Amino acid sequence: MTSPAPSTEATSGALAARLWREYVAPKWRRLSVAVVLMAITSAAAASYAAVTKYSLDLVAERDPRVLTLVPLLIIAAAAVRSVSLYYQLLITNGLALKIMQEVQEAMFARLMQADYARIAGESVGSLVSRFTNDVNLLRESLVRGANNLIRDVMTVIATLGVMVWLDWMLTLLIVLVYPIAFYPVVKIGQRLRRVSGEAQIQMGAVTSFLEESLSGARMVKTYRLEERETERANASFLERFRLSLKLFSGKARVDPILEIAGGAALAGVIAFAGWRTIEGAATVGDLVGFVAAIGVMAPAVRAIGTLSAVAQEGFAALDRIFSVMDEAPAITDSADATPLENVKGHVALENVEFRYATGATALNGASLQAAPGEMVALVGPSGAGKSTVLNLIPRLYEATGGAVTVDGRDVRDVAIDSLRAHIATVSQHVILFDDTVRANIAFGRLDATDEEVEAAAKAAAAHDFIMRMEGGYDAPVGARGERLSGGERQRIALARAFLKDAPILLLDEATSALDAESERQVQTAIQRLSQGRTTLVIAHRLATVRHADRIYVFDAGKVVETGAHEALMAKGGLYAELAKLQFREG
Image (cartoon, rainbow, N blue to C red; front, side):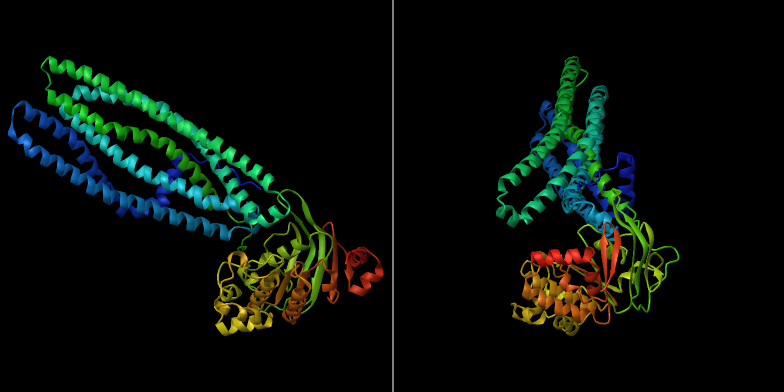
């Protein structure tokens, strides 16, 4: 799924004002120091023109101070400029990096609070791109903005001041020529914002594709899909090239425009100043000093001109970043929500309906009951709505009709944190983080002691294999638990659930991808874990749920059969048909 397009409603001014208000203004002290250093740097640069005029006037007068004083002045100006420039760059880059850190923290915190459906609805690669590509573009824009918009503008102002001192009539010529060139430069920058937004979305798609393809290398090689994946990659890279080239071609128009403006200004200055010098209205020192001033000012003007294109890239990135921060979760605590306490574990769905944002119906009037301590199984064809039920109980999704209740209370009326504190989940696709075994088990309860972690591992039949690992409980599991087998990962997940010790347990095909021995070990652990807990279990292997207290058979979002295994087999309906299919396939 592609990521949402960036908003087109936020203007550059509104984005800049918000960035200033929320992230830049609180750092005004450091920014003030940077501005002072920029002013010193600009003044030192502009002084070169004045020193040049002074030195030529001394040469014309055959004054020996040109051999002593002038070199000292130039060295002093260079020293002041280099020192102030160094510390100014340290401060401005430090500020930009600090702002980037805060932006990343705020964006990640918002995503962690976002609805599960929102996170699942955008590819991982696209989300990662917001934290990498978008943030890097914003950082570059901030650094360039600080340097070009403040320091270079100060340099232009300081140089214009020297020019006025040298010859106000020539300065007027410069002031008239350069602004004419800036109109097309600004228009180019505005067009680049849309292209930059497209490029950032496409970069997210490239990141997502690379993550999918490289993580699926085993399947790619087994099915001999190398050529196909290479073609897909080439198409993504070609599109990236097309958009990047479009951006660069737009930026490339800026320098020629400013080059023409600078050349026209220099030609006019030399012609006009030469005439005034011949007429005796100005000295050769004035002329050369003025040309030196243009030499100092021209790079600053060019940098300011290219800033528009860079800024528009930054605004496109900032728009995407703020769009994430501004997304309000749809599933929140109601104003009168109260904690869920003393949970016994009675779970019920009452005529529940659920439709996805796309309009597809997952549940259509489904009802079920799970009494405290019961094991209730949900079976049925793929896409029948079973996993949706397990997502509705902890309010990862919100029912669009009917009610989901725990101990008779609608889950929409209780505090979400307290609801989820009483629910443990184990799924087919175990999520392990690139950390130690101990840390991954302790996610079940972060304040657990080492003894409690080990006790949970023993209950999940995980302690023995953990102790065989180098490092034991301190052994790293690797990215996504790659250092563990499927059965070992499942037992780590079960240990996590044991440690949480929640009264409601949700099992989503926890044994479907295991070999026979691993399944036996995991099933034994599940039987221990489910004792005394309300357990809702999804399983395609019906042999794993035949001892459930009650089985609900789902089809097309509805409960079509209910009963114990023997009764459902005797009935000869959908459950019996699924069981016979499995028997024949086995």
